[in-house]
Length: 314
Image (tube, rainbow, N blue to C red):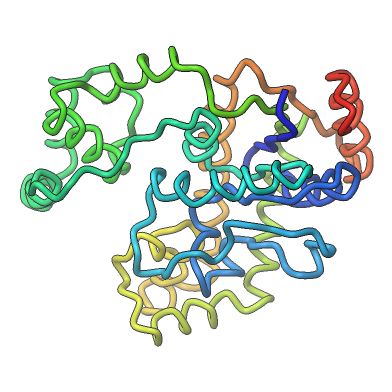
């Protein structure tokens, strides 16, 4: 067992607070695993931890990319793996915390797809998607790789095109690649923890409160600032939950309250997808939060799990 703790779970489940508290008791540093917190200038809408919330614990993989850049799982792993290795080399605990399951799984396995050279395939697929629509692209993927097509949502343009690109570049479906990947020993062997509320409504209530807090903290001004920096409305970062909805409000297309309702619902749907993803990982020990339980009680549960691994670092 490596001195690595993975903390997973849905949005607003308390991953940041748990990561900080465990870092304090395990001589650890936190490596963020969030596909939106990698972007600079996007602090409020991504719930990026503040300096106060970090409590002096070192955090990595925050604000490492410009908002107009496309950020991939391969790039995340290329940047995060050396950080994890450095933390371990200094005798400390690496605490990988976040809700982007694809990034976390790829980092732990150590074998994500390398970027393809520019052959024009992706550009042709992007142009075809613009012309024919994503329903056509998903149907195309269905004829090539039904397993992947059944797993992807029509709105997930990026991964649908990626799956098609993999097939046209390699002759191998992404599902075949994933099966072969599972046969390779993982790069790291962490303790897996994940947070879940016993009563799902408790999670939904926290999501609702978080949206209100983000507005009070100045999320609309943050979005205005991004636009003033020249960040395109179509940029991947601007399509994140909490940005695209309020962007519509700033343009006068809907009211701020209507946008807030959309963010609440989109966040709930996202939380469900996150839970579905993480439940596939049989190595995860679920820390289930009863109504009214505080962070310190969740930390106590987590420390008990760590103790059971009989690792002197804990």
